[in-house]
Amino acid sequence: MDFHQLWTILSTPDNVPIVLLLFVVPFYTWYALRQSFANDRLIAELEANPEMAKTHHRKVQPYKPGWAKEVHVWPYLLRIEFLAAIIVTVILMVWSITLNAPLEEPSNPTLTMNPSKAPWYFLGLQEMLVYFDPWMAGVVMPSLIIIGLMAIPFIDANPLGNGYYTFRQRKYSILTFIFGFIVLWVSMIVIGTLIRGPGWMWFWPGTTWDHNRLIFEVNRDLPDIFGITARVGKIIFGAIVVLLYCVAAAIGVHKLLTRTSFNRKILARMSVLQYVTMQVFLVIMLALPVKIMVRLLFRIKYIWVTPWFNI
Amino acid sequence: MPESNGHDAKPVSTGGTNGTPGNGNGNGHGSKVATVVAGAKQVQARAVEEIKETIKAPEKTDVWKSILRVKHDETPRSRALGVLSNVFLHLHPAKINRDAVAYKYTWGMGGMTFYVYITLVFTGTLLMFYYHPSKVVAFRDILYLESDVPFGKLLRNMHRWGAHLMVIMVELHMFRVFLTGSYKKPREFNWVVGVLLLVLTLLLSFTGYLLPDDQLGFWAVTVGTNMARATPLLGHAGPFGPQLGMTAFNDVRFGLLGGSIVDSNALLRAYIWHCVAIPIIASLFMIVHFWRVRKDGGISGPAPVVLESEIKEPRKV
Ligand code: HEM
Image (cartoon, rainbow over all chains, first blue to last red; front, side, top):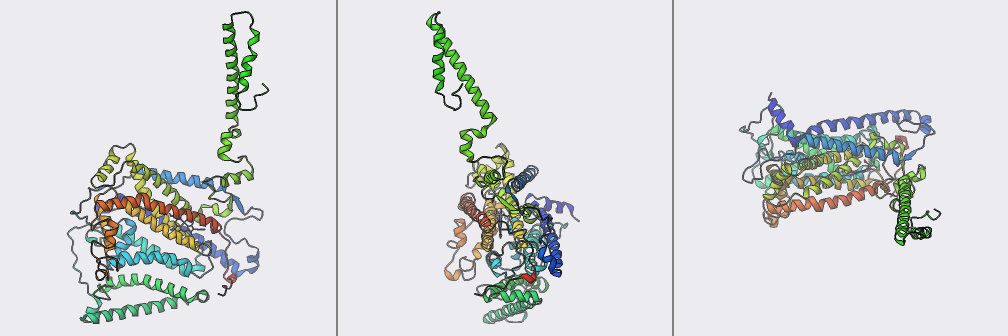
């Protein structure tokens, strides 16, 4: 155990936000899910008891019949806002007094930093560089993330869970979002910050960053394993494999989406366009862990090799 | 004094003439001084009176009324008006859902993101007084800020950590909005505006990273913009880029950096994007964002739960 190395990584000023993320993301996930489960219990109770559903105020918040539905913004909201502003200011002040912003040597194009890392919020994308070419990790994926996020409201046909925390009524969409946000975004940032060392190699927390470490990985392309050497053969073979993956993934997603009767009901409300868009994004999103697995388990670098691009 | 109701100064002169006839005997000089003194005393007394009144009830003065426009007393009506007739507060409705003020629904994340943004604009403007966006000088300016400018170090730290905090808060805000299903009808468009704000926040942070012109920023931006040369079609190392005639001197990366390497042009471009262009665009989108929160009927909840058995049939197209 090299505690010194561990401390050096954790206490690097620019890594402090990641240490913060390690605490706040799980905290707010728990905080949201706790409220979701409380609402889910109420929903189950009301579903079981239609009489109660007619009269109940339908919130877990405390309620008395005579209470006004609304309160004045001043003072009830503004005092919270002012208080929040003060607290945030104090936190920021204390943080800024105790910890100095990093400043390295003046920039020097002839002296490469090792590891040279993007700012932490882009480390997920930099991590993807291990598994994908730059045009995928650096351009296509961010674009797809942005477009995919924007598409969410237009492909989610489930009318339930609008304006309250719930898990049971939106299981699939919540799990998908948590998968994307926590597994693919936040945890990749954590890996990129705390685990990736010189040469972008994997160093478990507590091991020493060895600048001379070399790893000899023999990464092969899928067509080579099958003994396909001709250029055209590789193009066609890769296209077929990718197509097969897409079809298999789409069928898998469809199977998953039609498992419960509730989901089938929601699916019936979707237009063809909505369904196809959703499938496209889900299939692409699933391709990330699949490619990562293929790389880690079988040491396969590219699946589809062409003279213009490789996937 | 019967005429002392207004803030008018005219009656003072008549007070002065009143005093004259009383002093017949002595030389004219002395009596004149006495009248002036008496008049001045009266004026002083009135001034004191007026100041006392103003201090006792400042809300009755014309200056006060001109600024605040409405009465602020302890009635529900003027409480509402206090919010509605204030430029900064009228973003809010007069009243809101009683459960929505509880922290646990929104976590206050959107509001705190906005507050941190304001802090960043403030500290950033102060930093601009000490920063020149050109090679060599830029790095020295940071050293100067850290060692010689009063509170310069605190200023820089607050700007740096504020930026990190804002990124974390935007992401958590998005997480909250998703988990409460607040992007659903009628708030679809505001979610889209939000996604743009997320992108703009990341871009703000990224363009700022280069400005100290140190190794950290230089290599981070080099790594980041190297991706741009792999842009399909538009980058010289991207799929189909070379086929379309892209070289290191005419592709998107060249456009972003103002050159083929991260150098003084890149620094200037990052500076302008960071300090002028993106803040303006982001502020515009924030205005739209807040406006839409109001127009979409305020915060989405906490709304009464809806049961599965109550789903309405979708409208046929
Ligand atoms: C600079 C960034 C942003 C700022 C300053 C901001 C600010 C706010 C504020 C103050 C609210 C009121 C409710 C609350 O505090 O939670 C709000 C609501 C909302 N925001 Fe944002 N936001 C930002 C980014 C985003 C992002 C990234 C998204 C989503 C992708 C988003 C989507 C929404 C939606 C849909 C609402 C309405 C929520 C509801 O009614 O419950 N915003 N935003």
